[in-house]
Image 1 (cartoon, rainbow over the protein chains, first blue to last red):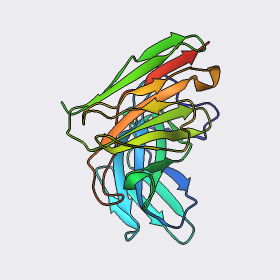
Image 2: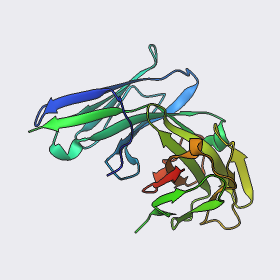
Image 3: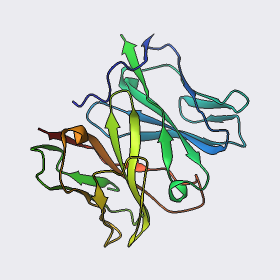
Length: 115
Length: 115
């Protein structure tokens, strides 16, 4: 499959444990954030999003937390499974740029699930 | 199945030989965009289009052209490829709406090598 990057920060977790992936963003004007998952050989796939007027949002087995004070975003995955192994990207949308739909991506975190 | 389709998936070419990477979406999305992905740099936007006949530069447009003659297609053109354009390319689309409201759907990627 395709390698999406070298020297990525790596998080290794045991199957069944909870995972927390962190992301720092730089622009306080960002008003929308998304987490994407990228498996080897595939394009990024949407996981969950959150608007800047929220500080927490939950999905199925995933929770995103937003701390605007310190410009920090985190993705929590409950009961991590082998199929969760992938590179995870946070992305931010800055109002008015790139036609309104532009996403600026972080460099990604490699999640490895150990059996 | 709703999807973004890119072709070719893999291409090896030589410096200066014009090439086109096609992108097609079947979701009637107004917004389309091209990103390149490089190790340690994440995904960077090349060009985007908010609708038919409307295109604009992203963060790294040098050496690329695009066109949007039809809503479903958004080809990426490299008129004279150079080795620094060796990368993994992703096309993405979304409905056009208010800022940040729309999730990008990505294609599977096109791996380009310029010798």
